[in-house]
Image (tube, rainbow, N blue to C red):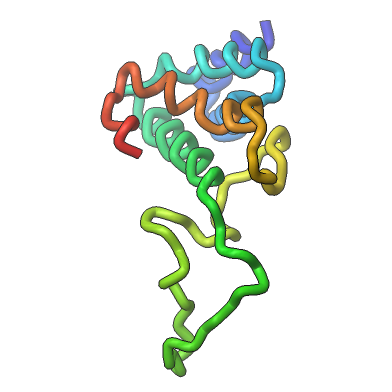
Length: 142
């Protein structure tokens, strides 16, 4: 019932569309698999083709995936590349990795995953992307 109501808010109430979609997207990372799958089934109906929902959902899925990337240790700031003009040292970042302050966070995800990661924590990050990859196979390239 709640997912149907949120879906209707997204589709029929432009004034609260962003907030309702954000709640649904947050629920796609819920620790309970039943809740997570219900939210995923709700949002994947809009991919592909239902703009601007499509691009918002795709961006969210990719940002959640990027949270799994291994970050450089906080204390290893070796900025010895001779960068005197204040540029950030991007050599320690992997391709496609976002700076930590730009990573997506939801109320259901841990702030930082300890390695080795638990299967359930990884599933919270990748299940939406895998569900969308059925309709958008290029997501598997990520």
